[in-house]
Length: 124
Image 1 (cartoon, rainbow, N blue to C red):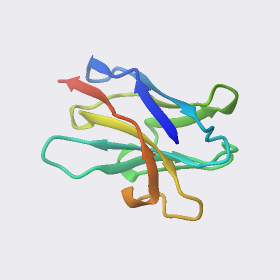
Image 2 (cartoon, rainbow, N blue to C red):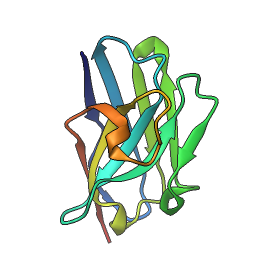
Image 3 (cartoon, helix red, strand yellow):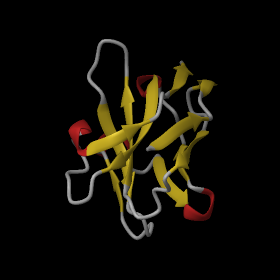
C-alpha cells in the first residue's frame, strides 16, 4: 500500500504562486511516475502534470504549460507542483497519484493510488 498526502493549497490572489507537495508513505514510489490532477466543482478530474521517476521527463496539460512545474525528491518520497501566475480558472482540488507502469499520462484510470487532495482557490 502507498499513502499519498497533499499539502500546500490555499487561497491566493490571481497572479500569485503556490507550491503543492505530495508526500508518500508505505511502499516507496521512487520507481513510479507520478501525476497531478485537478477537479473543479461540477467538472471532471483532469490531468495537469506528470513526472517520471528519474525526473528526466515531465508532461503538462496545454492549459498549464509555462506556469506549472512538476518536480520530485525521491530521497524524501515527495513530489511537488509549483504553480505560478495563478488564474481564477485554476481553482480546484489538486490531487497527486501514482501512475501504473506503461500507462497513459492523461487518464485517471492509469493511476492506482491517490491522495485526498488539497484545495486551491484563486481570487480575481
